Image 1 (cartoon, rainbow, N blue to C red):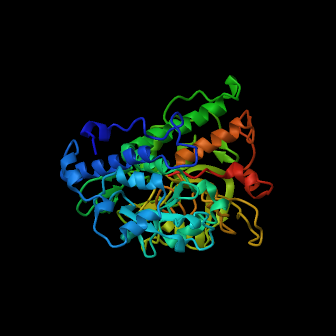
Image 2: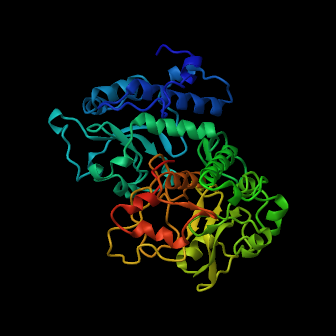
Image 3: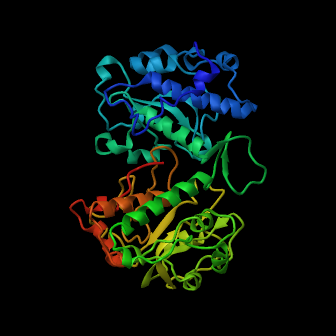
Length: 475
């Protein structure tokens, strides 16, 4: 492999972006995927050995996958298509702990895991589905991994067999299958963002979860900046549709630290940093029925969860935008979400809870927690009739749970680039709301966004209306 340390780290032209999209024709772009794979191998190697550049001689001495002695190597190679074999000839075999969710190169033929899918390659003696990277064993039993479909030349990441229902039947879940370079680019982006960090485990750390070499941070500084930018762009979109004399004369951040101290918001957390950085919207309603907290004393009085006793690694939910005069009685769904199963927190079913947009409550040292997440607590249940196959859906394509009050705009269980069940990011909510304003689904009046919170019932209206209240799958 003729390559230099500088070349292995120079992958800007290989990363997938809007300006540089993934290949759209019916084949694997093995050269591009190999460059992205080798970058991840080199990056992990540098972190493990404390180096600024990879030692390609040391990497070259590592055994490549198909140079390892194994009785069935030739049989496996014969059942792979030519581009996938070329990919394997172009890459370094990663050490264990290739990335946060995946252990290493697997190349396991796995048609038996997709028994209902037709294999048009069978006459050629080829497998349709191949696990390229295997899931880290710590994440559960019945592990799968990054599965490559040789028939469609697309990949997906069902971490376990249980996740496979989110990616099959394949022709009904095409939005969950991506070019392999798209998955690899997302992983590199998470590293550059600072969301996933390589390095040796920190002793007794409660601020991150560690799997092998890699750790997952509940939030990173770049997320504060991007979420602030997303909300300010959304606010500007609303303000641009209002007359200048109806806008409040405000230019300060939404909150000060002393405001948040009075509301018992934790000192070091994403939501405090976000709220003290973002500009105050110059209108009353930020979404249908959701009010901007211009009254700081009222904001503090309305907090139900920040004042409760929590463990050290727990971040409670903060009510961001209230639905005035609309409460909902606490039920098991909300109790589980807002207590985070803390033994110290006593919440009584039936207690009235203010509805509106909350920050995500979480335990920081759990796998895949998302402190930059949110929960929209509605004063009504979604999909009240469990027999109804229409209605609100989550990013993974699943219908929201019948009777749920908190699942609108959420990811769902399955994440196509790794992980499961973590909260949707607040940044993506503001981006979606911007689209609803720009497309005219939501309208703007003299007080901001028009309509009461019952407007969100439209997600259950049928005829594809759920798509307005759905966020496309992402990391």
